[in-house]
Amino acid sequence: MRMTAAEVARLLGGTLEGRPGAELTGAEVDSRRVAPGDLFVALPGERRDGHEFVAAALAVAAAALVRADAELAPPPEGRALIRVAEPLAAYHSLAAHERGARSWRVAAVTGSVGKTTTKGMLAALLAPHLATGASAGNRNSTLGLPAELLSQPPGIEVFVAEAGMSRPGELAALGAILRPQVLLYTRIAPVHTEFFPDLGGIVRAKGELLPWLDAEGTLVVNAEDPHQAGYPGRTRARVLAYGPGAAARIEEVEDRGLLGSRFRLVLPGGEAVVELAPPGLHQAENLLAAAAAASAFGVTADQVAAAARGLRADPHRGRVLRTAGGATVVDDSYNASPVAVRRLLELLARAPGRRVAVLGEMYELGALAAAAHAEAGRLAAAACELLVAVGGENAERLAAAARAAGLESVRRAGDAGAATELLRRELRAGDVVLVKGSRGVGLDATVAALVGEEAA
Image 1 (cartoon, helix red, strand yellow):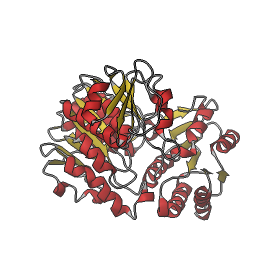
Image 2: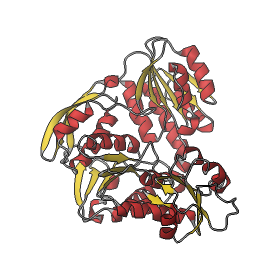
Image 3: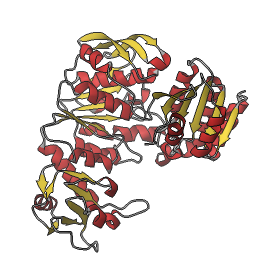
Image 4: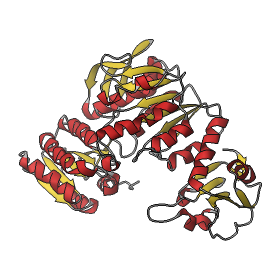
């Protein structure tokens, strides 16, 4: 974004207080993240209203977008207030305007599992060939993603956006802003089920992006996921499937466990041998999905193979670390879902040495929570010699299911701190430790304590 406060006010039909010429180069909804040149967007939150932080934000930000009737002090010298009837709607309108004003091509990545990793891989595959911008981390919501779009540097040719949702209607809102030329689906699974009656509701909500896909663009779907079977019929865009037997696929897969994988990548127009460092066959599938989408931008299989050699797992998303005592830690502590837990336990089951699973509760599963945690416990019993279940009632369900499935060494920890102390006593040289749980459990702090890093 490169606009003045006065230009934004005119665009949004708002009223301006303060300096009309305040220069805006980005946007932010979190007052703790504002940078010089930002437009701080004051929105109501679950616990606090963003209008409470306008004064603090304007110590750094160039301007603030606020509700018309909000009682606020005048902006500091050189800063501006832009008052509108509905800040969220205005914020989305501003992002949609920015998207329309740029000559970008947009690739949107959605699905239930692997979105952030696949988005990062796709950006890395495109970057050597096109000026590429991407949404940071997992800022994929109707709050975070527009800020990422509005804060992209000048001169980019492609914007890679992760689009997520927790409720119906959210992806429709993001689609109206993004209007992608490429739409990539990872697997769809029972994640964030708290606000959906069943998996069918999630499938319908994920499809909200389809009407916004450019008719001249490309829809990239997972050939193995039956939930995506109806998507191609809902768009006039070209359809490219990835997976076994599809036009984009991997063959001759060599699973190297914690050392990653090696496979032959087949894309429309060519093939190449790929060596991938991030461990787990799910990472090979993520790379395949990203490669299929990259091929829609003209990236070849040989170019994917060259870029893949430098790929590493993102922090807390499958990184392999070492403790001073000689244990190996697979840090996948950023988030957890039933599908993701199963995938990582499958990886752990193939590891040498004593296998330890540290599993935190999985949040936002609603009515599926009890069954999902029991199933995770049964899978853990088959994959490890020691299980540490972290959290409350659902962690106890997980632990009980593992015991019932025959696992003798099961420990309980009420929180991440207790898990850290337990592991310090239990771990020994040669152990392989999988750490996985929902973000709110805080197991990144456990990993940091074990390997001597700072939690992020």
